Amino acid sequence: MHISIISCVPKLLESPFSDSILKRAIKKGLVNVEVIDLRDYSTDRHKSVDDYAYGGGAGMVMMIEPIDRCITDLKSKRTYDEIIYMSPDGEQFSQSIANQLSLKQNLILLCGHYKGVDERVREHLITREMSIGDYVLSGGELAAAVIADSVIRLLPGVLNDETSALTDSFQNGLVAPPVYTRPAEYKGWEVPPVLISGHEAKIEEWRHEQALERTQKRRPQLFKKG
Ligand code: SAH
Image (cartoon, rainbow, N blue to C red):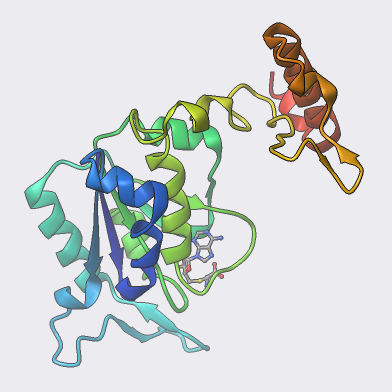
């Protein structure tokens, strides 16, 4: 998989991909993450990518031209399955969209900044808009990192068996059951005895019951989705 992230603040995207699981996935060649500095596509000598809003009002707007030049350049190198603009009013990102995107080959994630991008970018240059929640971030970089992380960890070979994505919340329409590690007792707080029993079938049954109970309590809407 290849993920191209377009940003006018590429530094914000340095650390999410330089440690732990994502770093290993990149090193193993399971995914290639390319962060593109939008300013490289600016035609002006100050490398600016934003301008005042037509009609006035507070906040700058990202210009269409550098974005168009950047996307055109990227598209000349590979065929993209989706060009996704990060936007608070976009489609709500979810585990099922992460699953869907993990089957794609090439993705562009476009990060906005300031007041967002010129509306014509949204009308003509992208294929999809994604929000990570009903709140406003100062830029799309953190949202892009969230989406890239949740997609990359689903790629075959990224997680080892112990951390298998299939046992995580939402994969089977349930949230995950509680987990424990040593010590078996801490300050009098005990680990549920069944987990130490060594009885695999009973452990599985307990985990399933806990997942059902937690889903009922915390995310009852998951049952309604069927
Ligand atoms: N004026 C816009 C917000 C701009 S925030 C509005 O009111 O809708 C600046 C940029 O941050 C956006 O262009 C978008 O790329 C990103 N962003 C902010 N919140 C986001 C969210 N919840 N999900 C995804 N991207 C978001």
